[in-house]
Amino acid sequence: MKTNLKFTVTLALILAFAAPAFSALLFSDKPNEFINSDHSTDTYYVGFMLPTIVSNFNLGPQGVVEAVSAYGVSSLLLPEGTVLNDVQLYNGSSAAVAGTDIGGSLKLFGESMAVVNAGTIADSVETSDGSIAYIVGTGFVVNSIPVSIDTGLSSIAPAGNISGVLENGDPINVTYSIADNADVVLIVLPEPTVFCFLIIGSLLLLRRSHAC
Image 1 (tube, rainbow, N blue to C red):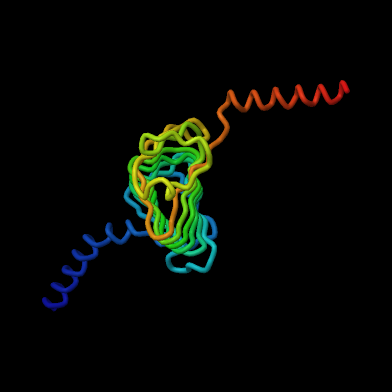
Image 2 (image 1 turned 180 degrees about the vertical axis):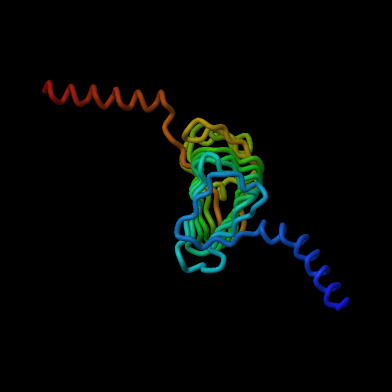
C-alpha cells in the first residue's frame, strides 16, 4: 500500500513538472491552423507528423508564438502577429512573411522557399540545401554595395549584411548566409519617382500616337 502511494505521488510530481514542457511542443497537421491569441510559450511544428499532407499555419494580428517550423508541403502564412524566436522551413515547405515580426531568424533548409515583403526580422536570413528566400523591396544595400536590379546574393558574397526597405515600407537590416546551392534573391521594385516618370512617359507616347 505504501509502495503504491509512493509510486502515485512520484508519478504525479513527474507529470506536474513535465506537463509544461510537453504543452510547449505542438505538432500541427490541421489543414488550416489559425492562431490569434497569446501562445508565447508554444513552439509549433507544422506538417511534422504528416509531411505529405498540406497543412497551413496562419498567424493573426493578436497571435504570438514562441517559434514555428514547417515541414514537407506545409506552408506558413505570416501577415501579422509575432514570432518571438525563429521561423524555420524544411523539406520543400514555404512561408509568406507579409507583416509578422520575427524576433529571431528566418532559416531555410532542404529546397524550401520564403517570400518576405513586409514585417521585421531581428537577426538573420539563412538559406542552405537548395532553398531560396526572396526579399521584395527597394533601396537595397548589400555589404555596402547598392543593388538596383533583381540579384541573387550568391553572386555577390555567401554571407554579409542586407539593408533596405521592404515593399510595404518596413525597414530591413539583417545579416544573411548562403550555403549548399541555396540563395537569397533580392526583388527590386521600381522607385516611386522612376515609376511615375514611366507612367507619364507612357501617357505622352499614347497621346502622341492618337494625335498622329
